[in-house]
Image (tube, rainbow, N blue to C red; front, side, top):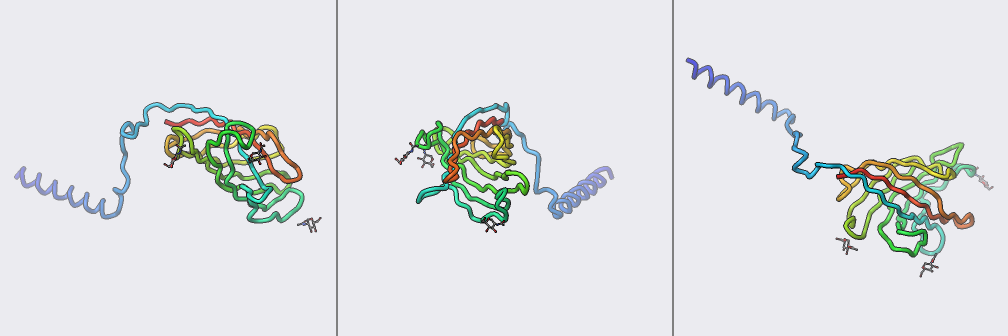
Length: 186
Ligand SMILES: *[C@@H]1O[C@H](CO)[C@@H](O)[C@H](O)[C@H]1NC(C)=O
Ligand SMILES: *[C@@H]1O[C@H](CO)[C@@H](O)[C@H](O)[C@H]1NC(C)=O
Ligand SMILES: *[C@@H]1O[C@H](CO)[C@@H](O)[C@H](O)[C@H]1NC(C)=O
């Protein structure tokens, strides 16, 4: 009798499991973070120089949509594949590319939405990226923007960057901006 109850009970459980799985409720599961090497978070600091080159025959920064107003450039969208180097000079050591888009999103102020990945191409960070998404009030001395993620050695990254314009050519629009990056990752 007890055996029969046990068998019936286990069959009901099995049926429940099949129904549960059939509803697609088992597509996600908790995994042990230690198996992914996610033990101790570290804080990495690095400083790179971002070169926005609009001039010349080979610009790295191209406006793909012109502004709708002249005063604040509102509506302008620019695609970039900018050099990231170790020093202010555009010809200093290349460590990666800043690839993404910035858009003028301030109607009354000069503010850009920055959406870009820093794709590193040297040393142990070769192939790793961090993703930056934030507001860039370009005339402000220091602009802080969030690091919202990363890949490779920067998996699970979060943090922030501080951007400081080091050089700006009013005629061409070319600029060099220092990015001080503070990134938490594993
Ligand atoms: C921008 O300025 C130019 C030249 O001053 C003018 O012709 C044009 O209408 C202006 N555009 C807007 C959207 O204000
Ligand atoms: C960087 O190198 C290019 C090509 O050699 C040269 O034309 C340019 O003047 C250099 N720029 C600076 C700032 O040194
Ligand atoms: C970076 O990685 C790419 C792809 O694996 C490789 O082709 C390239 O040589 C590497 N560069 C450096 C500087 O290690």
